[in-house]
Amino acid sequence: MLGAMPLLLGAAREPATVLTAADAHVDGYPTVEAVRWIGKRLAEETGGRLGLRMYHSGQLGRENDTVDLVRHDVIDLTRVNFAPLNNAFPATRVAALPFVFDSTAHMRRAMDGAPGREILQRFGARDLVGLCIYDSGTRCFYNVRRPVHEPADLHGLKVRVPPSDIFLDFCRVLGANPTPLPFGEVYSALQTHLIDGAENNIRSFHSTRQFEVARYWSETAHSYSPEALLISRARLDRLEPRDRHLLTDIATASVPYMRQLWDEAEAKSRAAVIADGVRINAVDTAAFHAAAAPFVQTWLRNPEEQALHRAIRSLA
Ligand code: GTR
Image 1 (cartoon, helix red, strand yellow):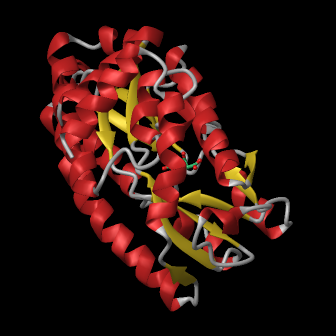
Image 2 (cartoon, helix red, strand yellow):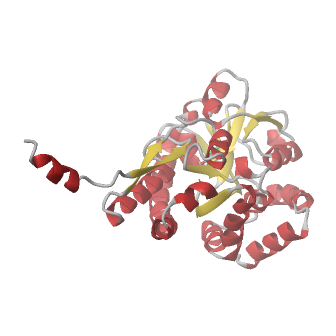
Image 3 (cartoon, protein in one colour):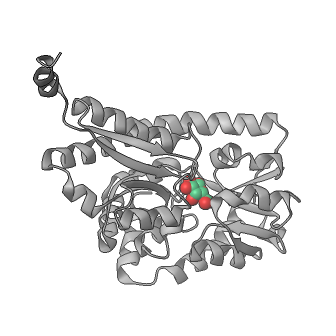
């Protein structure tokens, strides 16, 4: 027995490094699965030396809080939407502004290209490293009261917005009463009539079950506000150089995987909410564009953001 000990010790593996990752979305949501995929690939490529544990469903806190936890090196990674990053990282605003992208293909082209690289690089200003950018579909308005065809139909509605001044301001410009609330509180706020509606992509509308309460979905598609996967600079620097490169490469490789999951999930969610009786209506797109155009100009406040906007538009 004793004789076997050294052998066993000799065979023992180096302790695995487990990266902790946070996501506000439920298990199975495309962002959650894409980050899990990164973990699986890391474990495969390092023979188990590196791994990842995913804390989904907001277990580690609200999106804003998880960004601070990452910045202060308490947790390793977080996947957050650009919207809650808008106030602290002006570059993210440009990609969250209304109608900045013409289509999913345009958004993907821009986020894969120079504009996306620039936005990722700008996270460095606050001790973060942007690893990759994921899809988040198109955000549309939905509410408990009526179909929204034109901005006037939003007048007087209390609409939940994410914690971002541009979302708050845009809702106000459209004539709604914006109410900032954390993502996890929107369902009960709809149920208790604290708010009349909100805006988000159809996958989130479905996965949060908000469609059970808000039965009118209006296809404004006003924002493609994408998702960012962030890690703390300090954490990345503590990894061995080979692991650092591996993680950044695998994160980049997870983008097409995520998009495939996204396309499937979005189509399923759309079908599910329609089958449940949610009323989907087309909108007067020109009227929404007309309201958004001057608004966008007021938010392109400095030459960097103006240049980023031009770069995105040049890829339309
Ligand atoms: C979703 C996004 C979430 C969260 C949410 C919100 O589209 O994926 O991370 O930001 O919107 O509106 O709070």
